[in-house]
Image 1 (spheres, rainbow over the protein chains, first blue to last red):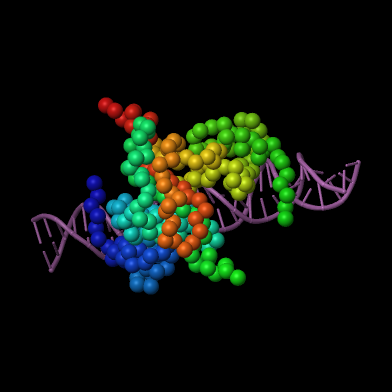
Image 2: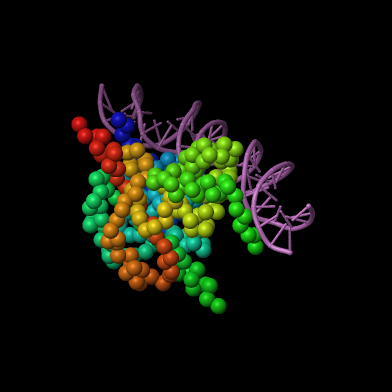
Length: 129
Length: 129
DNA sequence: CTAATAATGATAATCATTATCATTATCGTG
DNA sequence: CACGATAATGATAATGATTATCATTATTAG
């Protein structure tokens, strides 16, 4: 049983994710944290992203291409823009009645993830002629 | 503008996906279709999966590891088993009120995907002492 | 039938992510 | 504080999934 030891690299990765509201890739986080800790390695970023995800402190969002990460684990959903590939937040006033779903299901549901696809506000507005 | 030409390989890939109710990886499909067309190449499977997805005939399910594919595009949702990593269908009596969601959102939502995480019936029952 | 070109199979290339390993940092304990 | 155990790091090699390349084959319109 290994005990966690603190590291400034891990702190910096978490701090970066919690300070931003986009949904960066591991590489994005690497580039940002390198501004603060120039010696940090990409491998260290990947390692700590995985650790932090395991701790439940961040969220990994699989998208079909590179995974995205989210430092805000409160209940909110995402939209993947089919035009610019960005992942943006959708603040949803609950509305999804998930509790009533797995009625006739002989398994256990512990969590869910909901991804919307479409066009983000930026792309929609910049496409106006 | 390129026009589609038919091929028995593509037909076989689609037929395989439509005949099964698991959610195979590209490799899984490759192994299955090779039973019918021994000369088929893995690259051809990937190519046609992408084509078929573009046609809207199949669904690609990103999972964080290898992508899964689904030959049934009707409205249904999936559960990823955290124990055995399989993806199983969840037949849901609608229940999700998705239409009312993107009210205060200045973008366009064209589709969504909902993934549940938990324990599938098989694993749940085999874990009983 | 023939020309045009889409599709194939084989394989090399790419890209994201993970494993390896020698070195360094952290932390409880004497 | 100093020590020893071990977790974390940085650099890089390795892996695994997916895509690109390219010469050859198959399909289709005319």
